[in-house]
Length: 121
Image (cartoon, rainbow, N blue to C red):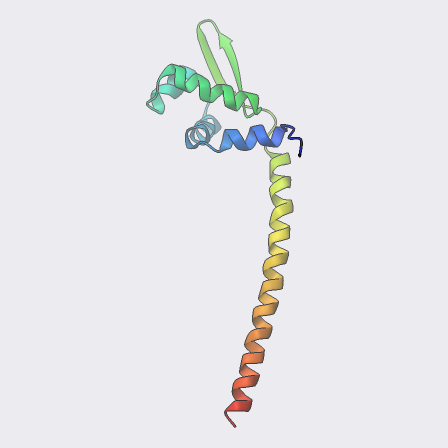
């Protein structure tokens, strides 16, 4: 049986899998915001937003700082370079596969044209 080890990629993709969390990241890309403000923007409970923020924090996508009674959120420092590199690796694999498929389709079309010309004579 394969042993599964959680990685940074797993945490990031899990965090990005939710539309609300992606929306939070978009909002924080514009300006820092308190958890309360984010909860209001997304029309959800404070508890619900805290859970979303916790997932984003575990992935390193968001950093929170408590100042007095307010917890302010901002984008994390890490960026998505590792995740982008992982995606790029698979994009290159798929590009190569599609190029190979294009070659096969072109060859089949060429062969079909040759067969059509010889049978039409």
